[in-house]
Image (cartoon, rainbow, N blue to C red; front, top):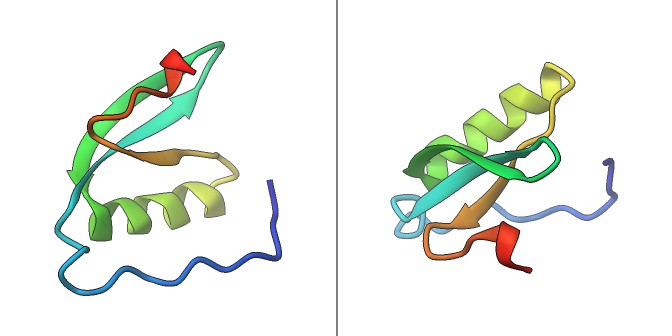
Length: 65
């Protein structure tokens, strides 16, 4: 999904927050826990490869809503 919205990069202290990287395949599948700074890099790499991943806080399971 392309969007004209731009999300600012996290503040330096937030870059070390842990997130879960998910992809969707009939349900949200967690593929990796990592720090937000690294997850943003993974997001951009996936987008360049034509894939979509989403990042969620570690305590949020997108399959529950």
